[in-house]
Structure formats: structure tokens, C-alpha cells
Amino acid sequence: MSRAGKVRVAVNGFGTIGKRVADAVAKQPDMVLTGISKTRPSFEARRAADKGYPLFVAGAGRAAEFEAVGLAVAGTVREMLANADIVVDAAPDKVGSENRGLYASQGLPAIFQGGEAAGVAEASFSALGNYDACRGKKSLRVVSCNTTGIARAVSVLEPRWGVDDWEVTLVRRAADPAESKRGPVNGIMPTLHLPSHHGPDVRTIYPDLPIATTALVVPTTLMHVHVNHVRLRKAPQDAAEVLRAFRGTPRFRLFAPWEHVDGTPQAMEYARDRGIGFNDMMENVIWEEGVQLEGKDLRFFQAIHQESIVVPENIDAIRAMLDLARDGPSSIAMTDSALGLRSKN
Ligand SMILES: NC(=O)c1ccc[n+]([C@@H]2O[C@H](COP(=O)([O-])OP(=O)(O)OC[C@H]3O[C@@H](n4cnc5c(N)ncnc54)[C@H](OP(=O)(O)O)[C@@H]3O)[C@@H](O)[C@H]2O)c1
Image (cartoon, rainbow, N blue to C red; front, side, top):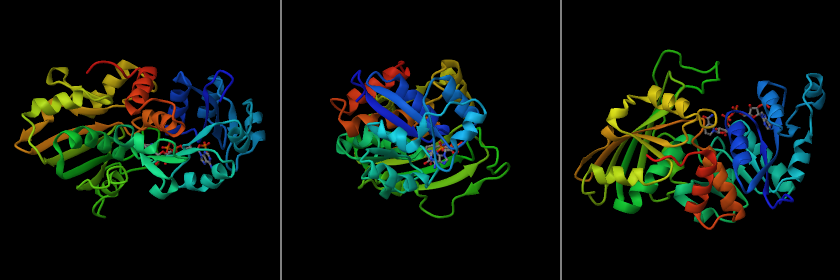
């Protein structure tokens, strides 16, 4: 703990996810960001320095390279970890697993991201899905953006009506906006391995959920879109009842037809207008008009902003592991209020 009684959080890896998690940590009333890491100088390293985040050298990086461009270095990652109560690993896919031994050797609780295999941590985490089961764990994996989005939707539907069958087609973004070397630029690429890995991944949170997922990649960078067909065990009264359930759950943003959010471009324009964080959209986006119910058959679309949806989840994972909140809803409320996500649907 810091002298002010705050939990000291280190973020190892300062790319798309790491820089967002670092900012989110810095905004929490019960946490302090003790450092971030970079392997090399870059515009992101400069931003960290401008924000006053202590910058540590990761991987094969060399302090002299940073110092040569005027960026002060606070030490090595090992030194960063020595002054932290917990680390959030946000290094590239599979590098988190390589970092695991380092965290374990220092006896430090660690959070990994969805690019790692589930076995990297004691459990997979979704704040609305399994907060209580993750309390006090020494390591957690925050599931991927798509899995987080699906798990949130499960947390709304399953307890209320039960699920007999859930089919999701995931229309996946090809790359994040800053990734200029990934494609396809022109094409629709089906993931021919069936089911896609997302269904099994959701079952790391909901082991008995009858879910099958199919995925394809399309040339867009804004968001993923999920096309859901859920056969519920019990029929809701009407679609309005389902909409009320989504609307009443944190981390869902519903758009009414009059808002003219026709697709992901407008959803992200809304996020830019709102101006939270990196103009992020951390909630699941649901189009009210697209929620259709026929008896027990529910169909709906949801859009997932891949770069940010896991950010509040990382914050709640810290609270769950270190038992900092009364329960999941309290942690979610604290996180969302600090991030500015508490606006009414
Ligand atoms: N982007 C998404 O859409 C998304 C969504 C959900 C989950 N995730 C998961 O989140 C994790 C991070 O993904 P990301 O998209 O943030 O990747 P990213 O943008 O590539 O950022 C990772 C950063 O880690 C740094 N790094 C490289 N080697 C390192 C090491 N040994 N130790 C510490 N840092 C190192 C790299 O920066 P420097 O080398 O410049 O320091 C890199 O920018 C992955 O598991 C990914 O699957 C990503």
C-alpha cells in the first residue's frame, strides 16, 4: 500500500490496452499508478513522461536509448515490480506468459490479458460474470474483448430467463486503428476453425453455457459486431422486458432509433462526442431496434469497442484479487464513476 493507503499498481506493457489501463488506474480513488514500462522510446513513452508516469525499461530495452532522447528512466521492470502491490500485464500476446515467472518470483499478484491462454492464471475474469469467484486469487486473466462482451450479455440473460442455446457470429475488426500492417484491406476472411475460440473462452467464465461461436474478419478498425441468436429457457414477456434488463445493467449503452446510430461509425462518433478517456466506448453497444423476440427466440446485435471494453474489467480484477470492494456491483460502480461511465441510458 502507498502511504495514502492506496493500492500500488504497476502496468507492464504500455500499448493499446496498457496505456488505457494505466490512465484508468490513475483515476481510481483507491489506487495509485507506480509505473509503466516500455521496451523502447516512442510517442507513447513521451506521453507517459508528459503525464508524469514513472517509466521503467522492459524486455530487452536499454535505459540509454530513452535517456538519449531526453526521457527519464525510473529503473527496470524488476524494480517497478518491487514497489507494487499488483501488476497488470499488458504486453503483446504470449509475452504475458513469458513474464509470469518474473511476477511469481517476486510473489506479486498478476493480471494477464485475453491474448494469453487461459492456463496463464488461476481463473478467467469478467466483472459482471464471476467477480465473487475471483476474490483473493493471486492471478487472473481478463478475457478478450469479444469474450468480455459476450460474458456481459450472458450475465443479463442467463440469470433471468436461462439459456438453452446461444449462437453468435462475430464480425471482427481487422486491426486496431493504429495498426498499419494488418489486414485484410479488401476481403472477408472466415475463421474456418469451428467453433471459433470465443465460445470455449466464454466457458472459462460460464462453464455450462451452451454456446457456439463463428467468426469472420472484415476490413474495419472501429469495432466488432456480434450477431446473437439465443434460445432462452423461459420466454420474456416481450422485447421491451429484455431491453429493460440491458438498460438496467452497467456497461451497456443502448441506442434508440431516433438517435440515428446506424452502425459502428456513429457509435464511435458518439464516443468521440462524449470524450471519455481516449474517446473510448467501454460499454456494450446495443441497438434497441435490433432486439427481436419471437417466443423464446431472442435475436440482437451488439458492438464491442475492442480497444477499451476490457479496461474497466482490469480495474475490477484488481479489486477482486485484493478484496478492495464489498462486492462486484460496488467495484463496478466505483470504477465506472471514476471513468465517467455512469451516464444514463
Ligand atoms: N488491442 C485489442 O484490441 C485488445 C483487446 C483486448 C485484449 N487485448 C489483449 O491485450 C494484450 C495487449 O494487447 P495490445 O493490443 O495492447 O498490444 P500492443 O498494442 O501491441 O501493446 C503491447 C505493448 O507491449 C510492449 N512490449 C513488448 N514487449 C514487452 C515486454 N517484454 N514487456 C513489456 N512490454 C512489452 C510493446 O511496446 P514497446 O515495445 O514499444 O514498449 C507494445 O506496444 C494482448 O494479450 C491482447 O490480446 C487486446
